[in-house]
Amino acid sequence: MSNEKKLRSAGWFGKNDKMGFVHRSWLRNQGYPDDYFRGKPVIGICNTWSELTPCNGHLRDFAEIVKRGVAEAGGFPLEFPVTSLGETIMRPTTMLFRNLASMDVEESIRANPLDGIVLLTGCDKTTPSTVMGACSVDLPTIVVPGGPMLNGRFRGECVGSGSFNWLIKEKQAVENYTDADILEMEIGAARSQGHCMTMGTASTMACMVEALGLTLPGAAAIPAVDARKKVMAQLSGRRIVEMVKEDLTISKILTREAFENAIVINAGVGGSTNFLIHLLAIAGRIGVELNLEDFDEIGSKIPLLANLKPSGHYLMEDFYYAGGLPVVINELKKYLHNPVITVNGKTMEENTRNTPCYNKEVIATVDEPFQKEAGIAVLKGNLCEQGAIIKPSAASAQLMKHRGRAVVFESMEDYHHRIDDPDLDIDETCVIVLKGVGPKGYPGMPEVGNVDLPEKLLRKGIHDMVRISDGRMSGTAAGTVVLHVSPESAIGGTLALVQNGDMIELDVKERRLHLDISDAELQKRKAAWIAPEPLAVRGYVKLYIDHVQQANLGADLDILRGGSGSEVTRDLH
Ligand code: FES
Image 1 (tube, rainbow, N blue to C red):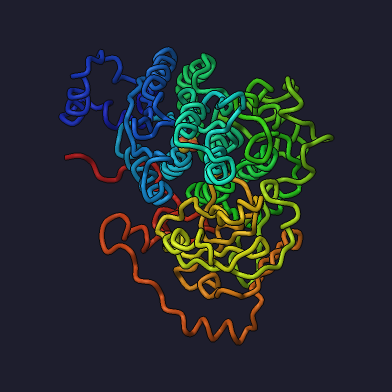
Image 2 (cartoon, rainbow, N blue to C red):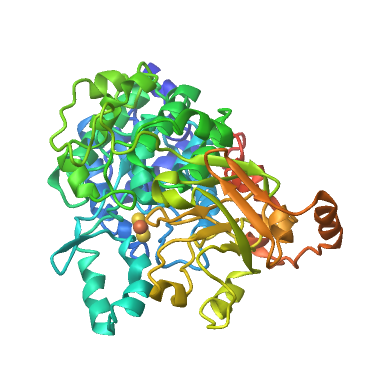
């Protein structure tokens, strides 16, 4: 009886009155014995499975495996569906719905008789949205990342899902790729269940949750179809039951030190720029102080150890065979807070001590890294007063310091309309400026910052130019791309005031992004600026536009920051 009282679920199932009867009786229509309601920790398996989220298509099977583990450890597993976000399919962008999905997760957990949570995740936004929601409730929580696809293969080449599609325009323009070539490429780039197998955003998110201590050690890199992934799911099911007994809530794991570790480890693997926006949002939910500058201060001097696309050559399957994230963590230990606790109750250091590396071409040592300094650089200047970011490891060295003439596109539609116009006045020294793709402006801050170059320059053999926007970039993409410019153009940030022909200076070493016009001219343009009409007058999108914060704060809704805990103050009557 004493054990029963400690469980949150006992507030539903532990009473012998009318409501206790109601809570138990209807659930028993699924055939659960009565002892399931007497002191067993109830584990919610929060499933982002959906046939419309191809990267998470296997998670329905995985839920059954997690349940096996929960039951073995004496828990009562109950699976529930939440909003799933399929990166390649949803329009206009999954980022518009990340916060909506997190609300669904938060309220689904709080409203139900759950003692512990297993988050089944995979595709890009399904990891941060579920973690954000879980943070705002703060129960014991473990993440089971669904795992990457097997390496893509096409005509004898290893191709990374995500990374290859950025080359399609170039392949069509330069190598005369036909429709048949593209069809063959499609299936070759997606050979198995799982998420993108480059170090794109999904792999970055999987590494992020492992680096934060929210998964069992080594979970991030195991391919979705590897039997060891299923073992990991089953062990996670067992472990969450113990976590409930230990009252190891998510806030005990997500300390400031854990966030700093995640920044270091993300730099070590060359993770996506989306890492920043999602980690900032998670920190905002759990109440840890974290700002944009922290990413530069903590991460930018960290050596790059993982040789993975899009920065490097290999893919996640190779990363797993080389030893995966524990090898990187072990290598980086002098930069880490090693005593932080993780979901298995052990410290980061205990989990990764002496982990052997099986392939040094894929995972380097700290002494001989692939690049001396990785991480993400945070830029400041009159063009981005609250910051902008660039991923130097994915950029061109010769463009890291650049002064060029702005060629401005007022929106994505304007870009598509004019970019391949043979008369467009542009050459490789110009700076492409794209407006209207920020959180409020698009709305939803899509991954369009790495816009394709004009066809006429691709034909000349130009592969990279400086591009600046208030949008994001897919983690699978590369280039000298300045992103997340804050404040965004739609709310009158300086980006909104850039005109064709203005000179722009980028100096990554000095962390500077400057619009070279006089202050007087800047003020004149500011005074003449007219705010665009809002793009929604009702529903969730209106709520989003009214409440979304800028990228430098994580683009969460202001009303969602922080948490409300797990207590439900009003009962079902
Ligand atoms: Fe789902 Fe890349 S599209 S992970």
